[in-house]
Length: 281
Image (cartoon, rainbow, N blue to C red):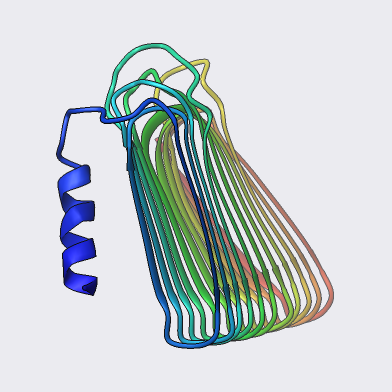
């Protein structure tokens, strides 16, 4: 059964047809070792999955050809759960589908994956993930689109977050609380705003970003509070602004910028900190 459902999802994402104009799906599962899959093709799609307890899998796939908004929400309460949301809008029109994907996981050793595909002129792509617990992992990917928003909020120890996006007007934000967390952002194209905030010890933050053309500014900021933290910022393009703030002891930072019209800011407070800045044009 699981293989059959996965096959249907694959078919949905290559089919050009829209079978319905309004789709709504709600799934509520209680217990362990459940699987829930929702596949929607058409316009005005909404999918909600709630799973309680551990070792559950939720999969949402939504496809539309430049027609109507898509909304998906997955909530999982327990440990060792898996959540995947895939949204695809293949049209190229200048409309506002306002695609949104939200995953919330409460527990430890959970995994989330969110991916949105959009044409160059489709606007308002939103992905948001919230995880509370330890050893969780969240991956967010947006390809194409306009006014792209990625938000990751992780509360606990030894969590990992990764954001990857290309498009126009990208806003990426990662918030991590407690210790031994890792955040990575890879954001490319025009008008990028990247932010990583970490509050705790032995955290790692990496930002890789670009600026496309003149007059389109990219702003990247890492803010770390605590000791034994590490931060890296890598930029390539035009009008890149990199800022890095660390408060605590034994912290290190590296900034590297290639291209023209860049600015770099580093602020460290505490003891035994170190910073390296490299700029080349």
